[in-house]
Length: 339
Image 1 (cartoon, rainbow, N blue to C red):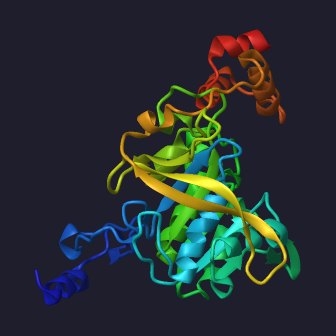
Image 2 (tube, rainbow, N blue to C red):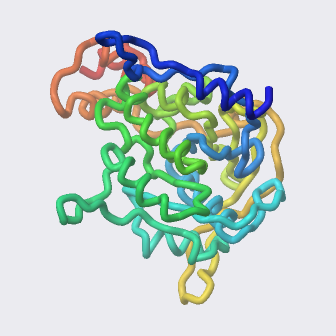
């Protein structure tokens, strides 16, 4: 079908509904398939980070999730190379962190990874009624869309932690989906990749990797790609970055990596960086089978901690509590024993 045909179809479209004999604009917009064209997935990093999509990076503490995200940022801003050796044209990166300091953690790690300082940007504060306040991903994503439109070369947004985008209970599917929708909209409107950082549920080893993402199963369902970090049981073994899910391409494979201290160029200090190793073949479950078992508190102790956190703001329906327990890897009998 030619472009003239498409224009003719759009021009001849009529709104649905009549009020007093007059056509009214529809309350729901419907697109005709005839006026649409299929598109290929466009990649920031082929088969790993897609433009216009939400991704998750999940892992346990100490596996360097934030440092990995900043290594990605360095590759984008410097026009460097990805772990597989593929080249990346230079672009801008935007970072929000609710956990790490910009000056003493984020910026040093980014520079130690070889990033270009003039192309990285940090979400600072939100301004409302003439006053500054901390940026809140749960309510300020539309404001961030407007601010980020001033970065025409934006290629990547990092949100750490992504759970902060959910206003309600992050263990409930419906509330999690609603909370993540503005993040998905940001990726689409700004045509950039969004990487949300999160945790793997405690005591979840042996389960399907996607089911181990902390919180509601909606986190893994909404994201088009889920990456996971693995800390092997052997102390001298490299850590692993694996693909736990992909709706856009291959969903297997990974890369070895190590955490190292490196000098920050132009400054008398060092910071953590990622040194990438060899590529890995296999499913996420196979590649994560080498991880170190959780040698922390007993399952009942962990379940008791979970209960305190879940009930901190008041009672929950038993059904909702069971769903939250399952999402975090706690068996219901274990939860009952912790009461």
